[in-house]
Length: 379
Image (cartoon, rainbow, N blue to C red; front, side, top):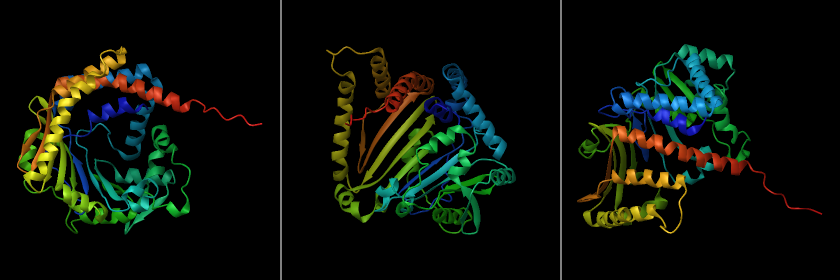
């Protein structure tokens, strides 16, 4: 299954909105938290243009790589048969996050040093899923009194797409850096938790109302208003960073940031907002950001003396259209914000334009990686 076409299908069918984001189950001490909501009623997924785009993507996959399209359809069918989950349902949504501490950089080596989780809200058949896992002999995982299954083995059983995703991680890590396996815990017919057992215990308790879940900072509704109906948000709270970085953050005055995407009438709107302890602390960032925005068109234009390939011209045109939607940097008191707006139909077109370019680059990179490395001659 080719990543970009499938990602485009997911983006046009899986992420979108509600007036409020539901963070229930996400621990209140998480440094980073995110949430999405259902897609029903949005132009980005349900307009005639969006539906036509989706069908073109399916046709493209079928034409360019019949194996990829077949794999994608087989994967969706396998998941639905095993769980009852419709991967294209407009009513599914996610919430998740992680705690960044002094050990966070070690995540690449040891999952013991990572605290985070994902909650997937999707209607499914719990009994069917349990029977499937038993039939496939998926290894069990225990989080307190809640039983689950090892995520890698369960996902890999659905088809080659997931098997390829985990292929690079099949070799066991040294015992010193092995951590708890990530588990999939089916709580009810609408809620699945993906996390290590130690963190799943916390998340499951919060979902049952035992404790206080993460909440968006007070007053965030006003700066979010520009996005209309936000359908995805990512937040970062600097006060929850580890002591090793607190000195630098204190000096900068940085407090928090959020990124939100929404649909406002006919536009898709992106907003990135940062908050500082004072206007004086915020001003340098505002000036740097505005200077960078002024330089981007020249950077995109490149060297006029150097001939450009058709691919480079197409990429330059795409980036130019993206930049055209970015508004001037906003600086108000202790906040600095960037807002971008793109007409929904035009936004869909931008995605479709860039996909062949990025796919070609990804294919070239894959071919280069697969090319045998010359071995030194030995006597």
